Image: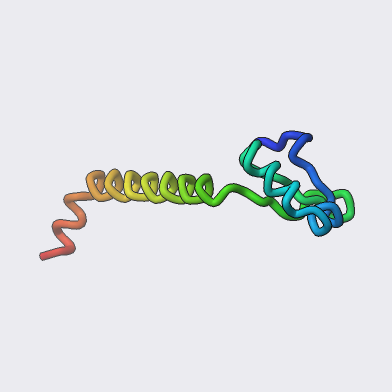
Length: 80
């Protein structure tokens, strides 16, 4: 994930003005919350999270298919 300096917010500001942080996420897709001037938390749009999870699942299915095809003969022997 790319971090834009405009997306950084202190934990105290996030605590006091959460609606501002939520608008930041709506505009930029994510906000990084700093604790003791170090990145500690990331707030992201739920739709983006869901899309990322689905992309990871597709990748896993592709890898599984490739491995099954690559070792098909071995799996057929094991199935006997």
